[in-house]
Each structure stands twice: as C-alpha cells, then as structure tokens.
Amino acid sequence: MINRKNFFKFILGGLGLISLSSLFSFFKRNSYSSNVVCNNELPPNQTNQGYLFPSFGNDNVGAGPGLITHSPYGSMVHPPAGLTRTTLSRFENPFSIPREVNTQYLPSFSVLPSIKTYEIHSIERPINVAHKTIFYAWTFNGMLPGPIIRARLGEKIRIKFKNMSKDPHSIHFHGSHSVSMDGWEPIPPGKETEYIIEAKPIGVHPYHCHVPPIAVHLSKGLFGTMIVDPPEGRPPAHEVVLILHGYDLNGRGKNDIYCWNGIAGYYERFPIRVKVGELVRVYLINMLEYDPIASFHLHAQTFDVYRTGSKLTPDEHTDVVTLGQTERCIIEFRLPEKGRYMFHPHQTYMAERGAMGWFVAI
Ligand SMILES: [Cu+2]
Image (cartoon, rainbow, N blue to C red; front, top):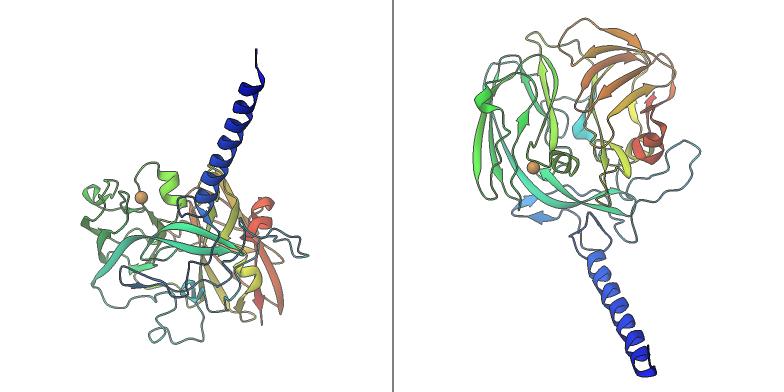
C-alpha cells in the first residue's frame, strides 16, 4: 500500500530523475560528443594544431539538423550562409584559368615523371555542412572530402600519413598497388606511417580510412580522390570532381542529408559555370555509406560514361549512371545552348536533401 508520505517520496524522486535526465540531455546537446552541435564555437579560419582551415560559412547558430524547407527547384536543404562561388573551387579546373598559377584549383595533369610526396594528417574538426548544421567531422588535412591527389600513370606517390586524432585511422587506396601498401592496418593516435604506391590504372580512384567500423570512419569524412591520368593526358576540358556523400547527423546509421563535395545544397546555390559547347569532364565518385547505391542524372543532355575511367573509349552514352558504394566513373558532355542544366541522384530523396545542383552554360 502507498501511504501519503511514500506517495510524495515517489513524486519527488520522479521529478528528480526527470530533471537529471534533462540536465544530461542539455549537456549532450551542447557538447561535441554528438555529431551535430548547435552553438557559436566555430570561428572563421579556425586553427587546430597549427592548421589554417578554410571557413565554410558563418551561420552556425541555431538548431540543426539542416533547414528543411520547400524550394521550387527540388532541394530542401540549403548551404550555410556566407559561402561564395569559389568556396569549392578546389574541385574544378575551368578552361580559362592558368592552372599552374592558381593552386586553389584541381591539380593539373603532370608533365614530368616524378615522385610526388603528400603529407596527409587525420584531424577532427567541426564543419558547417548545411544551413544551421555543424558536423563534427573526421578529416584528412582539415578538408572534407580530403585533398585531391593527381598523378600520371606509373608515377610514384609517397603519402606521409600522421594520425592527429583520437582514434586509430589509416589510408587505403583503390586501384592497384603493392599489397604491403594496402593501408588497412590501423595507425594509432599520434603515430605516423608512409605509403608508397604506383599510380595505376588510369582513371579516378577513391582513397579512404579502412579502420572499423569503416562506415563510421568513412561517413564522418575520411575519404578523398585520386586521379590517374593516361601518359598522354586526356583532351582539354573543363574538369570537375563531384563526390557524393551523406551525413548521419544523429548517429542512427542513416544519412540525414546528402551533398556533392561536402556541403549540402552548395551547387544549387552556386551552379557550376561552363561555356556553351566546351567539353566538360566530371570525375564522379559515390562515397555514400548507409545507402547501397546512388545515381547521377543530368537534365536536358546525355553524356559519355567511362567506367572507373580505366579506358579511353566510352562504355555507354546515357543520361543517368548508377554507382555502388566507392564505384566511380568519368563522364563527358557538352552543353549546346545557354541555360541551367539540373543534376542530381535519381534517388530523389537524396536530391531533396541537399544533393541537387546545376551546371549553367553561359
Ligand atoms: Cu578511420
């Protein structure tokens, strides 16, 4: 039987539990322990362990995840405020830019044989990935996706990898290389290693951390692109790297928002500008976790598909290409008249949640 005294004890105990749990969830919401953080702690050009990071917008105020509203164009997740048309220029090589001078652009075809050395460090940092949405990312060199590595067929690449984060990580390259350089062995926090690989075959190959749970390490941002050019290069073109990726904002093993090159809604706000009639070459990679397949669809124009980019003759001519996880291809097309040509995965929920964009022919 519950008497009056016990009844009050029960009520007070219950109230205590409720307030403790709200206190706990308050701290959880306001710490970096979850993927999404909602506060003002990310200054522009934040430094971490001596790195100068590019800033990705400045609207990190408010409650994530993402601002999901209807738009007449299809995407309902918008990029952070404060970005510009050049924020993601490192994924693009416009014809008109002298490539050797503008290092902010996609690395150019290398002319002389060499051993290229890259320093790649795994670094944890918060990144504005969509409007009012900060993601506590695991990155290579503070970038998401990681740096673009570009080499000529057969060139030697030396990767000096240092793990500057709190968990073990590694770098595993797709393509062919010595099995002793395969990069699946975890490198503990604070330790470093060196990978030496020969760039082959020609094409576009992802690299990524291979430490389990791989889905978590990869979807938190530890991936990047390697382009291997044929010895004679490919025909001159306006080149763009497009990597499809998703963010699991709530740690549910499910993507909440989607993006090309790390920022949801970016190419809807800032279309990729190309000239009418010029050759456009897209290095297309599917780096999604949690969604087994995705596609790339271009509106109003068809394109050549070079699967993995490993041949110089196209495998098909179409307007939609489907890619499994880490699958990739090179596509080429020309836009024959001025206008806005939409692109998106034909898994339309991905497009509506940030992965819709435009090419604009001018
Ligand atoms: Cu990892």
